[in-house]
Length: 470
Image (cartoon, rainbow, N blue to C red; front, side, top):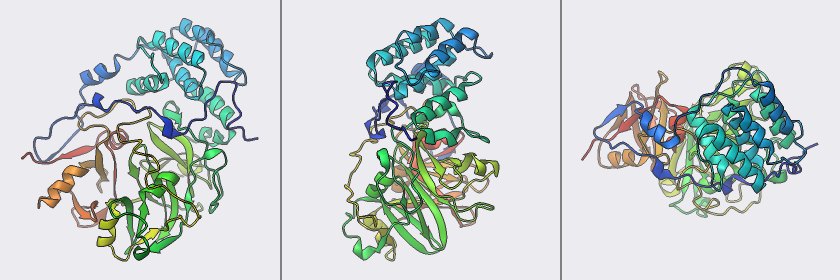
């Protein structure tokens, strides 16, 4: 029985991911550009220590009997309210690895007394003051930044909690798997498990993918203002625009264009729309991409409805389920972030998703109201200090596998001023008001935009193009 919203004994809160609290962008110090070149990661350990403090020492052994008993006292009775005093037993263990479970419980708790006791226990175990309105954010940020090890058997407790909350998440905990379960967190909504082509609203408020949306020619796209953003796609000479306001509602499209099938996830939290080709996966039906309702370092966790395989949404690599066992990585195509006016000016034959998405729905022009403009609203842990976390970059993986990022505004200014934007054998040029990338052989290379924190955390060794000064 599906019981997503009925697991109330914990004081569980059903809060959409739009209700997060912004983290201060000012905590990130950008390094000033000095010359046009590609820089490697230059994270200053002292700066990260100033942000997060020293990681606590933890044992490598399994949990002690006392620690196991303290954990089981809660996890064996998830259908009963948690007593704030139960976290005292966590503190007595002096094992900071238990803070991972404290963070997991806090994500689902709405009981103020429980939250306060959990935050106090986390503070005692780590030496960091986690008092504040949203302790889960600060605690999880520190744990990720420290890369604090989990104890043996942690995954089993996490599975018990998550499948208690919604049994449909059981596919996340099946073998084979390469998921780092420490980083898995609830995004505030249940999974989208509707069949392909189902255009009805999601039960219990999931984020509903849009499958094979209706489209119109550009001449019928006047309903969308020219200065609004679209995600432009070109495949085998055919072009299509996906309006940002529609993508902010659905966050996932399964579509076909130019004779190819693909999925187009849009992680609003990462500022990243990506294209993954879903045809030609040997030995498997076409994957149908869906939103799981979960996150990994503020990046949406997508899965395949057909095989229930889980993907790293930023790289397209299957990380759990049959497609992981088959070592599947979905090939990427380019997504151009452009204004609608510039996109249709550059591609007059383009189509655009119909105003109602083909499903009779009405879409606000700004559904999120600038929610993600001021910084991440979910934990991201450590961050690369070369750019502000929320700066938009154009990310490219070179043919030899090297990741390189180009700050979008600086690249646009350079090109419009007659300069060249080149690094690691990649050249950017404009398409509409967005970007396409080509390699040294002149062939197009997949590219997409994202917030810097997202690109750099999933590609920690990325090169960074820096424009010439003055």
